[in-house]
Image 1 (cartoon, rainbow, N blue to C red):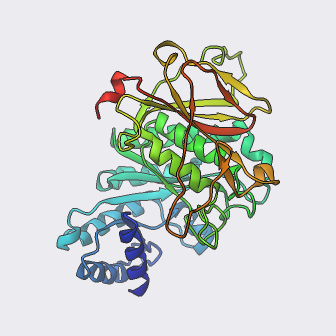
Image 2 (spheres, rainbow, N blue to C red; image 1 turned 180 degrees about the vertical axis):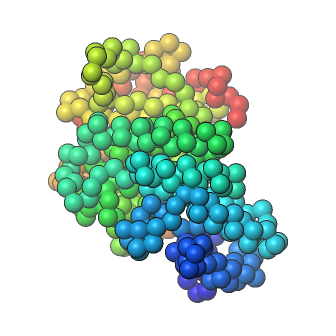
Length: 389
């Protein structure tokens, strides 16, 4: 109870919503879910009027390996139906959201598990969840974070999940409920460095492009090395990247055409671009920019700088640049970043620094330094797609 109190109070005072994953490994002799302890927890949290959404278990495809108890998809589906029936009579949770099954990387056996689950319980969940891990943590090197082949592994996984989900519940929301750069909680001095941001920012862009509108981050603090803050609560590179993303990027995705980049693929050859450009309507909650503005975010994995000229209606507009580069002698392994040449540090324990853009005059070519990433707000475009919600 004390642990739940602490967790809920943290989420509540941070303005976050808590999704709690109940223990799915308490099993009856017939391998069905033993829900007795879960019911006690549900009653306790209801007595405290905690506004919580629910889930059951974590990476069920690994239960046999980790705990010696395998649970197949149809049994997991029945367990979710059982959980739904537990929530119904509890007034505060009768309409609570339910998510799952939080499967791991969609290999053949995992897809079979998801198929069985969707067949039995696809309609009981508000969103289907899965987790993605990019690299085996035991073999990671800093240059791995720059491999386009690695960045593109996510796209194929999204399609596999979408195919199964749309077979049973077309249009059902799909969430990436856990994304880690490397397995086993990440790699010290790499997963929490500037270099890991290439995977993180590309993940956000690719998911939005393919219709996934929620991604949940592993982890905020304590477990592993995929942190947003260090042990002294100082923000790490991915924190600043996430903060800029939240402030500048709206949910509406725009198509991007880059002349000179879209080369024709030859038979048997996949084009993997090292320059990645994503575009969204600018976040309409950001009062520095009027509705109709557009935000580009750009990842340059080349060892050379790249020049980008805005065309059409974007050509003669003022642009605000938010360029993130590593700060200090460690280069890509740095745990500090600079924004437009100024190091980013907290003002005090509770005050973020001002995230100042660098204004670029209208018509100026965007110059993206080698192996960097940045956000570019094209002001006052009055884009029709961005004028309304």
